[in-house]
Length: 260
Image 1 (tube, rainbow, N blue to C red):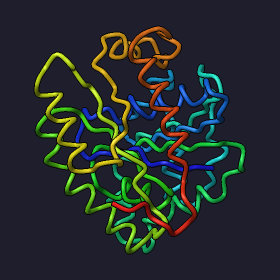
Image 2 (cartoon, one colour; image 1 turned 60 degrees about the vertical axis):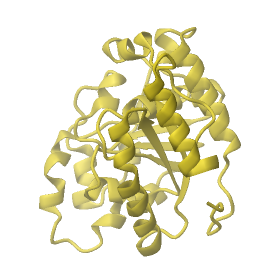
Image 3 (cartoon, rainbow, N blue to C red; image 1 turned 90 degrees about the horizontal axis):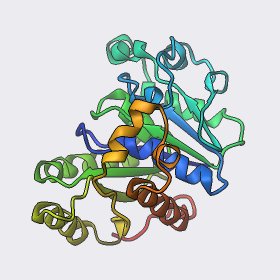
C-alpha cells in the first residue's frame, strides 16, 4: 500500500485538485484508492459531496481511535474517502503539550486493513502539525506546484521540511515527484516556471503537466472528479497521464533514496 502525502504549504497550488482527480484516475486503472482529507477546510471532502466529517479525525489524533470506521464510499470507481473534520482547526493548540503527536497518524495508518493500493493524504496549506504528521506517516510525498513565480519561492522551505522529517521522524520518506499544475501553455510565464522546475529538480518533476482547464475548475461544484464530470476534457486526460506516470514511479526498497 503506497501512502502518499500530497502537500504544498502554498494555497492554490492544485493540492486538493490533485488528490481528488489523481485518485479517481488511479481508480479508473483498477487501483483501490483511499483519499484521506487532512485539511480542516475539507475541500477534498466537499469535492466528493461530503459536507461534514464530524469529530472523526479529531478523535484519531486526540484519542487514538482507528481510521477504518471513518471510511466512506464515493462516486468514483475504486475510490473511498476519509472526510476531514472541521474540529481539526484547533488541533495544534490542543495537542501542543502531548509528546509524539507527529507520529499519531503513522500509527493510525499502520492499523488500516491492506485493502487499498494507494492512500492519498490531502494536506493543509501549511507546514504545521497536520502536514508534518502526514510526512511522518507516509512513505512518499507528491508536491503539486502552481506555475506562478511565487510558487517557486516556497519550494525550498518545503524541501527542507521534507529533509528534516526524513532525518528525524521518517527515514524511508522520499520525494515521489513535483507535478506542475495550472499550466497555461499560451503564456511565457507558465513555460518558464516549468522549465525552471526541470532545471532545479530534474527527474523529480513529472513529465506530465496539468493544463489550465475550465472544466476542471467547474468539477468541484458538481461534486464529481473530472474523470466523471467531463471524461473527455484535457483535465481528465492530464490526470490519467499523471496516474500512469505515478504507477511507473514505484516505490524503491525501503531506506534507499533516489539520487538527486
